[in-house]
Length: 242
Image (tube, rainbow, N blue to C red; front, side, top):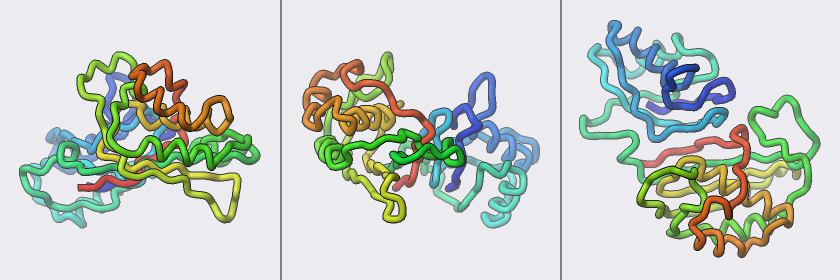
């Protein structure tokens, strides 16, 4: 299943003990479709509270026999209007939405112009000039295979922090020079990794850091060296590749 969502009102994708999440809402809809039998939704990965998705993916098993087109229609009738199922297709029994992922692309949107209350939940309102060419240089230094321990959540507890960033870019809005979109394509990302990277890129764009500081920060393997995370509202899971 491929689906999009506005994460503004949710406590992220993954189910929580308290509060509404994308997963809990979709599983509730699937429960109704599946003859009041529980359905476990396994996504390509979780997104934080306030983060959006253009093409998130997930797999699940149903007891009920139902055509893909009918399932898509039924889900969209049951789901709120800030979640939309774009495509449903049958897959083999050994397919896994998370473990079979080859790459993911995230984008982060920034407004350097005047504050916009309409897009405040969807574009980070930085509202000041940034040195975009310096941000682009810093992004290129992140490409390749590195230990990204400096860019993941403290106390993560994992042993492997090595990830590969395949391609990066800064996309300029031709209609509005104050808006930029940072694109990062990689084989996988750890919790808060993209937001921590963007937070550092903003400091570089402000002139507080230099683009080649990236090398020291990567080598340090110290979360404190990378600075604070960028807000969730500008972040989107754009695509998942299998």
